[in-house]
Length: 202
Image 1 (cartoon, rainbow, N blue to C red):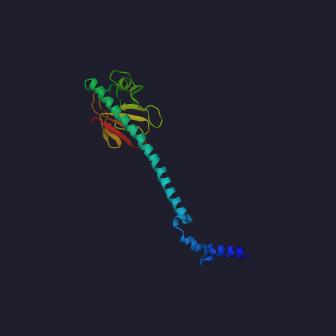
Image 2: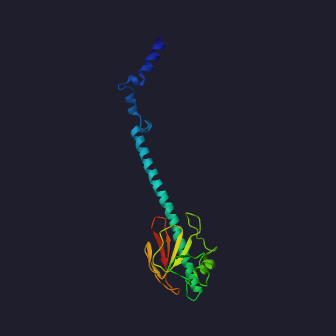
Image 3: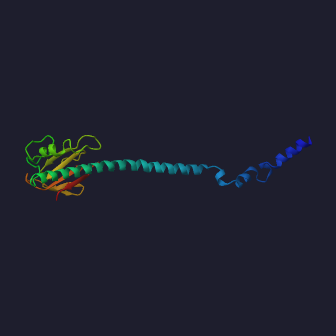
């Protein structure tokens, strides 16, 4: 019986409750890293994680849109390069034969020699990747000698004979330009509504 009492007395003296302050005092002696997280700390971590996710959800679509618009700009630059190549191979003339004040699809327009149709079939069709990055369909290439572009729409390139670029807005000039004009502005619609990328040879 004495042994049992001694064991009970020992356990009692070495328990957390034996000391002043009990368990709470023992907890204070533990390093912070062993105490676990408080509810406030957990809420702060969750709030930060939510903020990071929100930033990602906003940034990723913007980056994807910028990448698609970069592809559209590359298409415009390549088409401009091919127009320059056509001119170099044809004594400085451009494929404006048959141009009118109404935008005409170069893929289906008149097939006169040195027309946009001629240029499209000899330099672009099946040779240059002009797929729009959103639709996957080939970009429609149209040309005219009017200073007024049709309504903004993706998947289109407008070649305005006799015009010059005007920043990210529709080009200036071009109305009534002749088929012998050596000036043009090539405009492609970008993904943000009513914005354009333009390249000219001025």
